[in-house]
Length: 193
Image 1: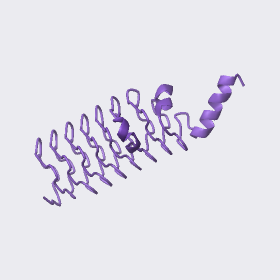
Image 2: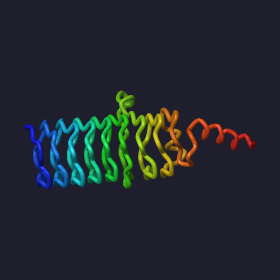
Image 3: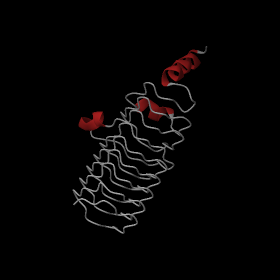
Image 4: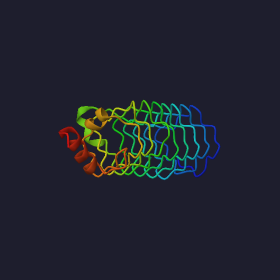
């Protein structure tokens, strides 16, 4: 199934498994839609409602989710490489085994995000270059996450979460310092210097 435009379409609870939707889905209602293994690469999903949608193993690379609602969406194993989620909401979204390389994640609501994964799949959570500035990550499980070169400026994240990450190399930390400077200053604080 290949479609070019579905702006404002009501596809609530639609069964679109393996659909090829290189389309404009701006303002589409895809609440509880089944989009397992769907191909949405380069799709435009501005202001789309994808809450509770099943996007398991979907191809979402380079898709634009500007202000999209992805609350409680199942993005298990989804490829979100180079996707833009500017202003999107991801409350309770499940990103287990999702590929997040170079994702623009300037999201306002990222709390209770589940990005935990099975031991054998831990190397797949790669958020290299993602923009998480001013994001609320307080309840997110970041175990073994690769946050290389990620922007965490003013993000709400605690030391326990940061310690659980595999890599923070080159990351901009919540206080604005590069990770390498931040870790050095923390060592100096702990040594009493």
